[in-house]
Amino acid sequence: MSILEILGGISLVIGSIFLFLGSLGIYRMPDVFNRLQAGTKASTLGAMATILGVGLLAPGWILKIIIIILFIGYSNPISSHALARAMHKRKAFMYFKGEEIDAYKEIEEKDNTEK
Amino acid sequence: MKSDYFKKLSFGTKMSRFFMNWIFLMMVWLGFTNSFAPQELLVGVFLTALISFLGIRLFTCCDLSLLHPVRLFNILKFIVVFLIALIKSNLDVARRVLSPSLPINPGIVKFKTKLTKNFAKMVLANSITLTPGTLTIDIVDDTFYIHWIDTLTTNPEEAFKEIAEQFEEILLKIF
Image (cartoon, rainbow over all chains, first blue to last red; front, side):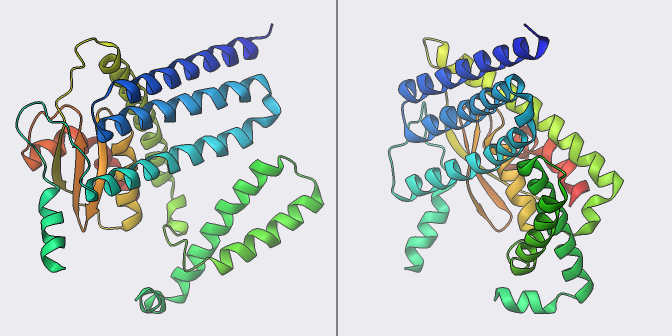
């Protein structure tokens, strides 16, 4: 067993642990924004680590792997931002622990008065 | 609107952007084909030149000045800072998800940025999304609206210091 195989295996395990934590976060969090928080961060690092593990196990693929990792890091936050914005415009349920802290409301009120 | 903005650019800027896109696409091509065989290189050079020529109005983020050594150094520094923040944010998510009491105190805060370029703002928004406990909801001109899983402050300046300062410092040097 070479050192690359060991590193690849470790990377795969770390990636799958984070993917599992992400799905647990989606299950436990109270509203859509907190679910997106947990889902985005954990799935980004989880997918990156898993794919990096594959790249270490098959070193001929490493350049493609780097491009895929860059693409995941670039596109994942954009999709979660689009989802969060759409859900806020749809007035999805927002969980607050104490008082309501929502600075984005002012933009929506402005949009509504312009219509 | 967009075409007016494009017509105002000088020929040099357009060429500089074209070459930057060409170099970037060529690197992607080399990564995917994974070979230096002459026929593949030839096809790649022509294909990437064609794509960057057709897409010159769309890919307007950077020109050749991005390859200045100081900027390249700052890009490397940004990647290191970003990776550390990404790992920290994942440990943060793990801590919040695994603790039985679910320690969250969510809220939406806003702050202003000094960045002017759209692409720089997008990079900042993406990095904020992947750093501990924050998620970009919207950017309106120079104001960022951030969903914060553990709202420490609603004051814009303090929120800016807490969330975005480390990235903005480096991004101001890059763009």
